[in-house]
Length: 328
Image 1 (cartoon, helix red, strand yellow):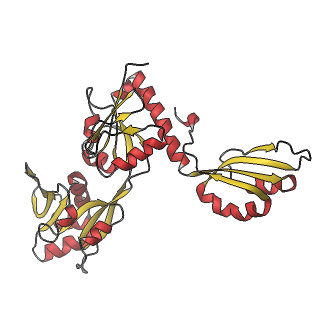
Image 2 (cartoon, helix red, strand yellow):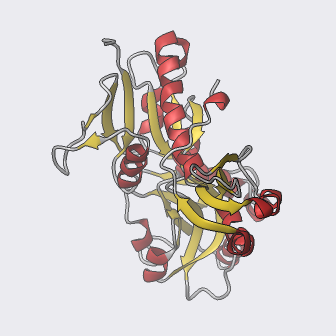
Image 3 (cartoon, helix red, strand yellow):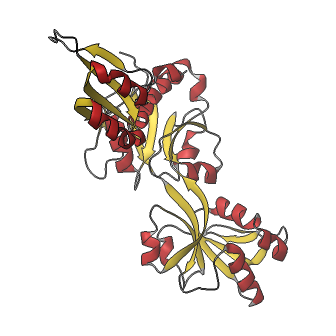
């Protein structure tokens, strides 16, 4: 058994349950001693796991002594500008990054509307967010902002530091519960949301979608230079890709009469080519078994043909489909 270990950090918080379930489908079982356990055990002795907040993870994947691999939202990879390698989009934890204002503001339906209204009424536009970098870029790339304020950066306010020249637009660093800040502390927010229900419950409306984000597997670039770690990362990627592939596919089995075989085959959108074999004990050679993988979104369109020409249909949702040939 190898004495080496790959140091992996996964997100604490809203993504934790989704990642834990995803890993379990990949055959990697995380065991937590308690709800406060930050160092779960895993059934692979070559992997060490620790939980961190997703906002922190990208920056802990830089340097020789830090983590080798991590999972965080793509939003935080962009926000931190961390020099990491994105290995795989896990396609879970999907959120939108949005600009929101109070739902009573009928006159504001875009960032440009908000900027114009506050400028014309000589008011300071106050925005709360956890995304300082994203928010700065979003504002300064807006045509209305450029028209009103040129290249002057909004004033950014944190407990430790202030910077920026434009005190007519202020960005306040939020430490959570951002949706509760308007209308008293700030006028608008930039936040992430999955369904928008929390925003609506706090009397906010989404006026612009800034970006989309999902959980991604990211690697320390130094780890990728180590032969053992690079190969271990490939092994882990194979398992995780298998879960993603399986979530989009169905494994189907059916019995088909010889006369109907060509009718079924012509309509069957197999992943590659279906496996076709004669039924054991069928002395007449009139029956065949078909075994194949199809895309989930193609299944309903097949029902009319399967109903007419097949018997004994079994549909199975695979746990994993490992595209070994694709992982180089």
